Image (cartoon, rainbow, N blue to C red; front, top):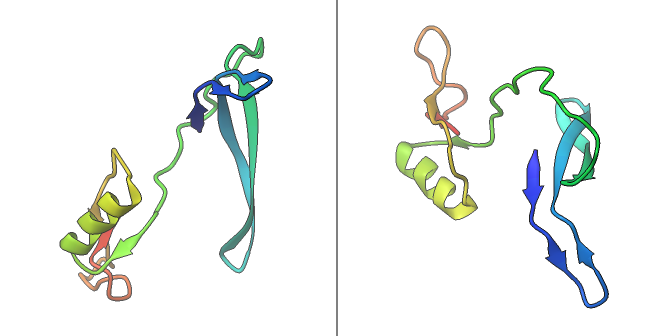
Length: 99
């Protein structure tokens, strides 16, 4: 979900809106197309949460420092960092931290 503030144009004003992620089309684990749908904030439609979203892996970093630099560079807030690996303590690939 993404919120948009009203946008002013020379001849009209776009109202505040929000965008919902409807789904992805992928092939061999690679997302090819992402489907989004925008709705005006003053829409008469009624929305309810069908299920809580799952955490999404955004980045694998080789160290905590690299992860922190990536977070600052990309401008993410409310990021959850997690050490990843197998049950036997081996790291996924050579990554140490997931964001």
